Length: 128
Image (cartoon, rainbow, N blue to C red; front, side, top):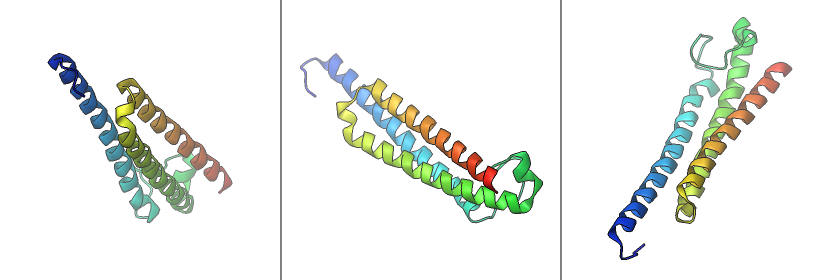
């Protein structure tokens, strides 16, 4: 965007860079969440205190642990892909949004997706 004012142009470019960094961070987080879900989906993570869907119920039985963590892993994988999708859409429309809107959409998508996953996983856990 050429305004004839180098200070405004530099500020505009810096804002665009920040928006792109926020969006790329969302893509990276989505890929990371999807990536760390794969061992859970494949049943490669035994009951432990640091990695997986840990509740009293899941830690009380290996059968419940693997069922719940396979389900949670699938939900995490989908959530990661949804976050990547939101980020790609933001990347396409980034010039039309101000920086606050970009950050708000990223933040709200992360919180919403996370809340949905937690609710779905707890609901599933209550059924097994």
